[in-house]
Length: 359
Length: 263
Image (cartoon, rainbow over all chains, first blue to last red; front, side, top):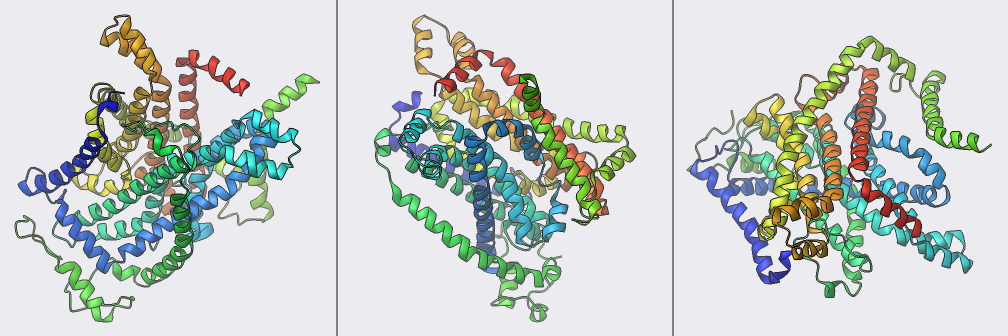
């Protein structure tokens, strides 16, 4: 714990310098030719690609679609897992212990292996993806809920029962709050895996979402560096992952200020003074953003899926010339011609070694 | 009477297991679900027999080999790196923290196309995916584990004039080992999850490939067979690690359970 001696300001600088160094290296190494820029494009090209995708390929819509699926899947899993886990953990602990092996088998059922079956049952639409996310999120959540319920302070339970609390009130007031930190921990630990699984699911079968965009854009290498779209979409996915886990961490710190935080590698120990008072503003903001996302994101996602579905065939192969064919493409875009030329027209900086545009 | 209850307790999970199997067998046969989408369990067993035990073991061993190569590589690199970062250079750890956070949240699949371009189709890409997905959990938990070792223990060891090496092997390592093993378990689970996906993307053997192949050929029975195989192997791996955990951390078990009983 030698980090306690580092002042906070210096620590912030240190952390930022880590990112800055990465950015500079990412820019310089490909440009200087130490790394093959065809495989590893410089940061500026990737950022340009992000801008181009944002302009032409509904990057924002795809991001919202992915986020919506993650949030909706987790909410679905939580709605199922919390009551089930509470009942099993509190009222039927024997059954929970007996069922444990079965749960563990089911938790090991890889959603990839059943992807086709899910697709057969639920179609390639939203349902299959939601089920995949919910499936992956459900088992760790259930595990954590059962664990959390069983670790609720027994004195609290006894006190509540001795005062004649009804079971439903006991559940809402004692068991659920007692298990909440454990539940959030379950979500937080599985969020990266969830995102990875979801992206893979979108890559394998879907019509919207970042995974679909990645799959689509890695099929056509229009930009000067072959792998730029992959890196651009990858950057977005990673940033989503970082943001989601940061939000969950902050939520955990704000909501459960009364619980000592066990650090998953926080180099600086969290200053105690900041956690002395509950801060509900952030939690309320997150919650309302979640609701907004659930409502608006669902609508936007279904619209985007329909848009892409109509041109999923020709979308894979963009027309060779920018102005020629885009006139009779059926898909819905505000400016099809401008969009196409914008994407293929954003060429490399002049120093780039590979200048092959479209085949 | 008591022993009946204890036997019943032990068999409880098996009852449900058999119940699931019976429902699986009867539902398609009685026409509740389409027997094309959900073939009855006996047909899946039949397919397994048809495929042959040798083939099944071959697929499993190929997949296991991939997991182990990637996982061992990740462990060998991440554990020492975590020791060094957490123990010797906490400033460097703080410096690298955002970077590692960012890298760890890159899903390994999206790197797969890049790996294929750089390394080529074949084992390299799969090893890299597995390495990537198990490296970060192991590194994070290693650092967390070492930083959460009680400083009092380290100080008391120091006051008894223990050398750095002795402190590391006698105090820090045992103190951090529960967390280390949790990290290893997380890494293995993660990499096993990723294995199936990466095998179905670019491989010509293994369980993921078998499932992928069955998917593209429309052998629904084989998909289920593959799912069962994957789940079984994953479960077995989990149990092995749990056994190792309880064997290594025997000293840890007693206070833990007494704590729970007290609570």
